[in-house]
Amino acid sequence: MVREAIKDEYYDDALSLASSIDTQYIEKIRELKKKRKAIILAHNYQRPEIQDLADLVGDSLDLSRKAAATDAEVIVFCGVHFMAESAAILSPEKTVLLPVKEAGCQLAEMITVQELRKKKKENPEATVVCYVNSSAEVKAESDICCTSANGIGVVNSLKENRILFVPDEHLGRYLESKTKKEFIFWKGFCPTHYNLLPKDILRAKEEHPKAKVLVHPECRLSVIDLADEAFSTNGMLEYAKKSEAKEFIIGTELGIIHRLKKENPDKNFYPASENLICSSMKLITLKEVAESLEKMRYKIEIPEEVRKKAKKSLDRMLEV
Ligand code: CIZ
Image (cartoon, rainbow, N blue to C red):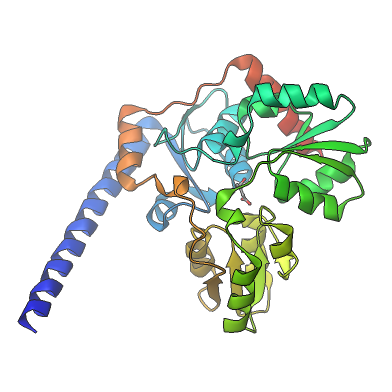
């Protein structure tokens, strides 16, 4: 009993110390943000405290476009490397910082520009559609980009029939199932979404029979087939807000649940699996954001020629 009381006391002390350190970082970030004329962006998968601190929270393209329209001189992108690159492609006059340089996307790293060039040579008649989860170099080598939200529209807008889709095989298979095009796939996948299995959805449905099942189109088709809807992160947020349903099973990275709950306090959200965690997305903490603004690191640099070509692929998508 006495031991438990001492343990609780230490626990409370540790908690209050952690929260006072967080408060110090938040104050420092606010100060530096003003000094640097910076804007802080947080992807929907970021840690709750990073989302709460950010000026904007959203998906990668939405954030990059909104930041480009501001007069901020510095963009701190709390997300993964390709996302910060997208911001730099759209805002060449701003400095873009990624607070942790190791925050990469495993899916984006499953293709290099050299590999893509080789595949293009083998399929000269195919139109290259690349998912935004890709490096600036891969975007530059593609004909058009797409997001998980606009992929169907982008593919349908093409007059060509044969599509080389990179780098996500699963999103590609989902788009193939929704369009009448002929697809060549790249063997890339998001490990977080790939780990979600049909049995996880079946178990979650058994536990919450009244809940709507929302999954991300980066999941396997066998998982998407069991869901009520497949949406991008922003699509899920929009749907949950408008829906009359009160319960939802969420099949994407767990970081989004913070925002879903915050924006819909009267509704319940259950993870489709407790394993839906992207470790790269969790690398950025308040300390790293403060240090990033203080030391102006890590700057995203894209050669101008690559940036212009990548922007063409993004612009073509935005026209659609
Ligand atoms: O582009 C993004 O932000 C990603 C990776 C997914 C989504 O659905 O928002």
